[in-house]
Length: 373
Ligand code: SAH
Image 1: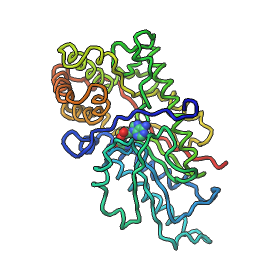
Image 2 (image 1 turned 90 degrees about the vertical axis):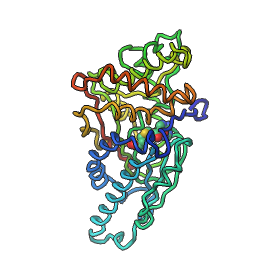
Image 3 (image 1 turned 120 degrees about the horizontal axis):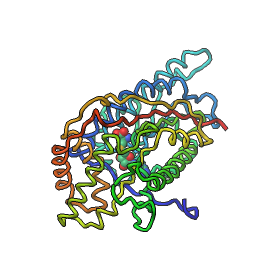
Image 4 (image 1 turned 90 degrees about the horizontal axis):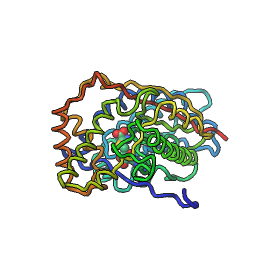
């Protein structure tokens, strides 16, 4: 917020449609991580979702679930399916307790798919699982930045977000400012090698995640759950030592090469910084624990099932193209993607990533419960 007016968050949608470069077809890496957290999400809902005591008491026939930063699917559909099944199971179990008459009521679900307005919601809704309505699941889109309020007070029972909160509302200004000690001259990302750059990114991350939690705290009913999955760094591993850090720098090198060849300008290449920050685990823990509206029920590492795998060049190129599509086109204009990712593919072939040499990043799972005031 600036002077009480919410600051506009910039928007960098994943690649839309369902073509070969789409997020739909190139999000299996994220899907694999979600799959490995599925049981944890179910368990969190079964054990911690506590809607018996909130004030005001919600209508327990209708559960409201939101996926923040849902993109185009299919991952969001799996997430929703899992949450719906967990709530149904919980209801079945608790409906059997004496004196509780919820069991007689048929459950219905209102599902809200949130992402930035220029997300490809058309593809999302065209590919929505057909059986939703048969299972009492009704859905709608909620376009807007999750760094501000998106829902009325006390209106959600379960919030979910995965692989989203490393996307900052914007890249910190100083990292593109030549006169600042935080000028990120040699990279397009926070490599964690320059203290001032890291600090500028961390300050932005702290502000953004604070705004996210503040908004969700108002939207979730007391006793409701906010589930967060994502990627961070072990405390002693700078981004540039991970394979993801290495490939991101390679993409930056390709942009510099393209500027040298006159395909884009040097000024554009130099001023480009990704609005992405992967916090160290202790930073993330600190920011989460600072909030006063949620109790931290679970905060732990989840092993990524593909962590030990050597990924093919094709897989890496497609994954990064689908993710960086929006942010790169926004800065460099359209028409650079084919050239950039051809160059990136060739660079990867010339300098293959040694996955065994790289250090591991971390996937985290957090379950927060809205405190009953
Ligand atoms: N949750 C999905 C998609 C992750 S990709 C999955 O796990 O596969 C990250 C998504 O977050 C993108 O669709 C991007 O548009 C969205 N996003 C990033 N910043 C956002 C913001 N401020 N508000 C809403 N959505 C945002």
